[in-house]
Length: 443
Image (cartoon, rainbow, N blue to C red):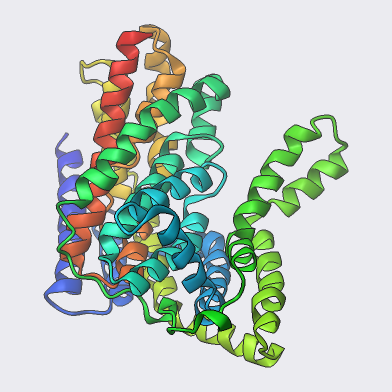
């Protein structure tokens, strides 16, 4: 127990040091992450020859899955903004829903596309749309954007086919369809609370989002058509939904055909195809040469370079904490607590999430610990999937790459990011738990 307490204190001290370096010390966030990651590895007892390897593995694993998506997404967002397509989309949305209801329109969009899309993909795709509305109609960025991102976060943590919920369905022997149905029932009130209700209290927070997504005012006659603008901006969503559905449309396909479907459904391949189409539909279609289109793409990469480094730094810290075994020690200690299994599953996932920063790791680590208790307590497996999923979203902070994506894209201070993003994630997590406990009483 003493060793566990010491490990938890070390984690807390390292996280506080990270916050102080970035806020009070004005350090570059990437450098702060590197220093704290190395220090955490040493203090938590990792062999010296493994500390650097752990840092490098964390950066590589995190960027390996995100760098292509973020870079290609930034390219698409830059082109959509520069050609006037974002301005056209914003105009259509505002005419359809009105300035007072555009927040609800974006939230609904986030929920619909969040079901088939991975969180990082959905975030990168939807941020340009959020900013186009913000800039054109002078609305608060956090107030407009947070409900959509809450919807994306909920679908990521609660609903299969996202990695963690899908894996939990398998480990708990739950029914995928029932889990999805229960998840949607719980997700809707969680999104409403964390979105439109919560954002009323943070409407005053000032944000100047990244310059890369600031559309230049353009005469209406020079904008691309409505159909072209929506089709090009949302093409990645359409393609991912299509490739997700293909295996169900052709369930008896040959292994070769299934490999083709799997390849086509990779987010990087989808984004690459979308960028190629956008270069023609928006780039060439607006009278630009291919050289000019490629120059825009190059500028977009420069604009997100620091974001990539910060995300890599968050991945390094996450890996060090994971390899030190802190999360497993905390979870094992909690397993002896006398409380309802659904609440215990949520609590274990929540604490691992706070320590490690990854929702997926928190969910999968909890599954191995809580599974034996489920058999003894006769717990509904679908509800346990959702309880653990809700816990895995608890209080995203400085060790979570999603925290830094939101901070950097919306250009907020660490303090304001904690007041907005972190609180939103906490509301989603607690609302999810309450929904699970209520459903458990009704079914």
